[in-house]
Length: 343
Image (cartoon, rainbow, N blue to C red; front, side, top):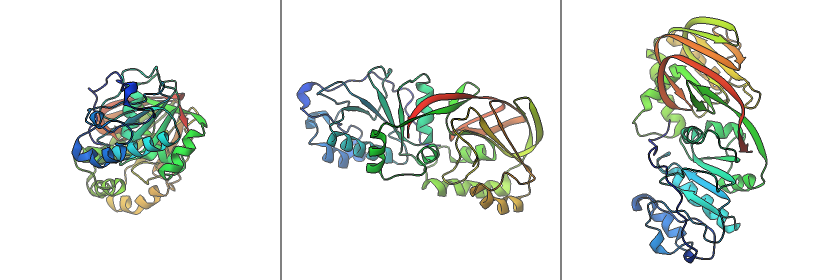
């Protein structure tokens, strides 16, 4: 779960005029307290009069190639700093782009690529705002939770190396999931996972894994299981559940390999149903889940399916890519090769 985003700030792009200069690049544009250092670094890229604009879009010498999208609230402005760095790398390479920091455009029609700087929540916001995007996407890890990026790129690269890798142009069509009409990339978590995300709502985050672990420890001792039924491609299963994940990605919470067998382009979602276990057992098996060695445990039910219906005895806390929701019924399906990502 990331800091609150800006759903009302979808705006048309406003490129600076050609008088802004001969080079293609990015100018910074959010509150001075956050962006002062960035503005100083970028002052050579555009006239100072433009640096005070709330949202700045600059590629004065040609039509932009890359849309660089940023969630300015992600991980204490880490995404803003990374956006500045990415912009500098692109400018040095002479690659035209537009950077969107305070609002996103209503249309992607003028772009041939979109690079998204933020965490799992920012990616989730993007795919639900632009569900029919056809251009290749890049996931740049600027959030407190970057689990989808970690899976896609086999870990986190240093930013210069990541930019160079993205510019090589290799792509992969990736599945997405749909839950009650909302898209997700990494996964759906119900029960224990959802309670953790609910705990983090509105709270200032610690470093990704630490904040997650604090809530995990709380719910190891306090979470109460309830009855959950699953219908997965015609197969039924019902028990009291500690947690239920429907995964398109392998990792949750910064390090927990909840779905180690997941392949994000196989047309299937991975179901991990963890049944009721006592608090001491929860503590014992937490490291096992972290390592992804839990699938053969007797209280774990694992299946792969494309169409899934989950019925709960009561409304349960849940999350999609770390974004909180609650429901008693979850209708889930896999959308094969829905989005194309640079890899």
